[in-house]
Image 1 (cartoon, each protein chain N blue to C red):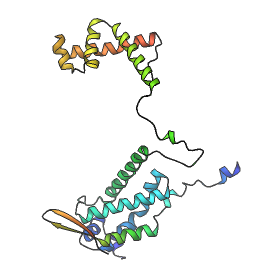
Image 2: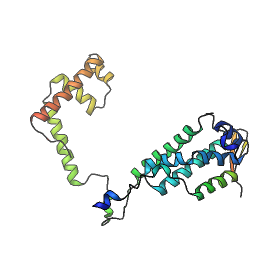
Image 3: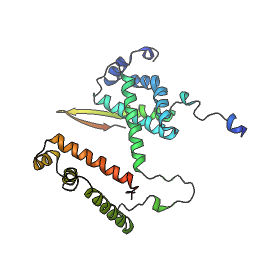
Image 4: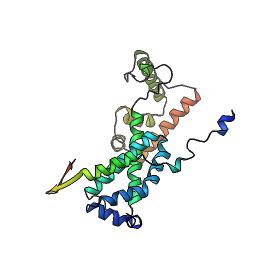
Length: 49
Length: 195
């Protein structure tokens, strides 16, 4: 029973969470790779490696 | 990068749209914790938070590159709104999808329900409909007439008013009293009309 009270609340540190580095790296890579070209008001997306 | 850290959001957004990828890194770095914690506070699951966070910024990137963003000076509220919408989408989807939590015995029939009524339910339904019909017969003539036209003949109140030669308000009033009286009879006789 004591453990129930002594264990830290799993959401206690909820305000200090940050995304994984891999997620951020993916987003930045995705952004670099994504190109949007418009032709006569139509937008075309391309992912360039 | 140090200089970028103090630059206003609107300037960073504008630079990013014009090709400065470092501006996006600064914006993400500036708000990642607030957005991530906002998502986590709603879904309470790290993996799901990670997914929604990623989807949020994919939308942000696509919108910015498509030059669809036009709320200068409101970058964070805009991103928060995208995250909020994705959280709502997630809960809508998870409500539609049957869950298997891996605890206890899994019963396939708990997720595979035949929406059609079985023989027993059909009998109960038809019995209830008969009971309701008998109760309607107990109503005063003018109320019964309106209720039958509205419920059984699916007529609009305008049509009912024309047919019975009264105003729409009178027809509405009669329908209201018909329902009140039906409830009274049901309560008074302790009739159960549930399937």
